Image (cartoon, rainbow, N blue to C red; front, side, top):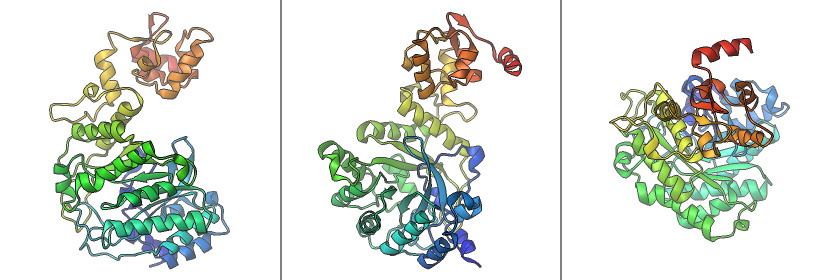
Length: 417
């Protein structure tokens, strides 16, 4: 077995750690290739092998084999991100996790200097631009947090790396460690896995929901509020994210989104990631069916409505079981109930009302407000030029008091355009 085959075999589950990327179910296909278990020697050799190439010259398969995923930064820029574990060994027994204690597979561990140098080799070879670093836990979360911090310190101060670093906060990390990680990273995350303590017990019985997982997020926000950002490496405090495993603990969408909404408000969480459960062999949940990836997608859509569109939890279309419909996106479901009889007048509505219309997002709402200063918007073509998805928006809007085409009429118009 060659090095790349070993890499795929040992670290096939690294995609269970979402980081900055977002894929719809149709494109995701549970692609679970990664790099977390590759040995330092093999990774350094691969970096040397690829050094003559620029990143575009590498095939997608080689990039995935190295653990490269394409990440969207907060400003919209896309970068090649290396997703790694410092060690694939772990003393925790999380029921869903491929790296859980006692599972029979090859474990691989990096020393901090080895990890830092391996990443920098790939960076110099123009294969990757940023690093996402997580880890299994050996001898306690605080000890592993020290090692993660050490990697970032070597990169920042010894090797002079000034690019993007996303560090994971380990369960059991101490406040001083969280503060030091904030001084070194562009983003921090800690995986809640479940929406509350009761659900977490069904997934990870050795983790303490509030003490180990929620508390570090509160520390981050407290430090951001009370300490000057010039203490960080680039003069900006890092953003924070979390992740939930969806469908493994009988949790409802209402539970997941209630916790997400609370974290947005209380600790200024930048984003919640949702990972549809997929059973892993030789784990306690190996016989549990995989979650429908469309459920993951609807949770993402709903979380963005809460974060960016001004929706409240009460306005989302939960059924009697507290779950979202899979057959329709939540914004369209709300519009069908509220906007069919009361369409939005594009030329007079404020930004908040525009955001309620399917097919109109934050950027296109701003574009409408800006375009109205130059004159009225009178046709669907005017909206299409602004980037509005008019096929979705048309049934719910007025243009200068006039209703727009039905779906059937619009389809005919679009063929003529």
